[in-house]
Length: 158
Length: 102
Image 1 (tube, helix red, strand yellow):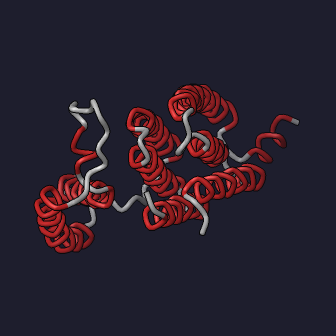
Image 2: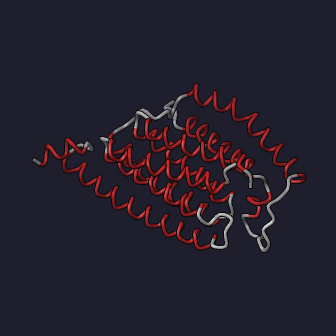
């Protein structure tokens, strides 16, 4: 695998960690740390370590969620961007074309992309090897955006 | 042109130093635990990158798995201690806690 995959992933990892360190609120820092954990899991999965990647994402997602709950309940931080109608609208407008583009890329890439053929792997997670790593990253971004949109819509007071 | 292994090793070192710096200068116990997690991320990445392209890839991945479990367990214990400290002293600032203890 070439540097054009390793370098952006590394830069994204360091950027999310720096954002986590310098965020004003602890809850926002934890959210950025979750994204850092996600990127690290993607690095593991992309470079053949699918089991450590998935275990990493699952374990630290749970750990960071518990920390987020603890922080929110303990310190009473309420400056999370939850319940903002404008943000939900903005994310909806942004996410629809991204979802369309990602789906189109996936459909195109499934037939034309060069796959990382790993012999003996015909299991549940085969799609991770069959699609290109960038498609996986785009999918993760789309899922994250969708989750934020849903949280924003359903947490409104009215 | 550096290889992927070199890029990931450099990233791991950067992560470890960022975590150490944040751990030293943070004034919030939650952020201290987060810094510990960043150090664990760096250690995991260093372990993983040491096996890329070699014949010992599965050995390094096994060590990464161990490190993930140990890191998560340590974080859970640290979080429990933080809850206890917050209940007792009402703050998460280590200097304030030291002042209240004295």
